[in-house]
Length: 115
Image (cartoon, rainbow, N blue to C red; front, side):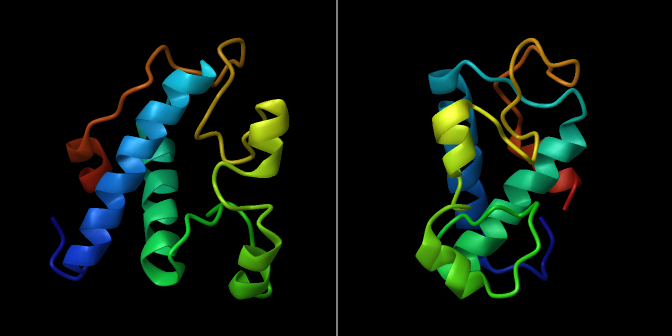
């Protein structure tokens, strides 16, 4: 682990890792073929969860994170994922998408390597 990150952050990272694996199974979606993409997205979710208490989409640029949180649209899983199974970040990929892997699991070690 990287010593510059707080223990709270690592707890959020484990939460987001667990959430991602469970949600992928529940929605019959898969992680990206490139595990570094999955790792970076899970890390981004954990960062927002650590800072704001909610996993705001790390793939968007926001003028105001607090305003976006109030709107509740881009909190993962975002509205487009919940309604149409469309994940802008490619964390949750449809099985017929060319960027989909065949796995709904990623190790914490893989995520740590991409921090």
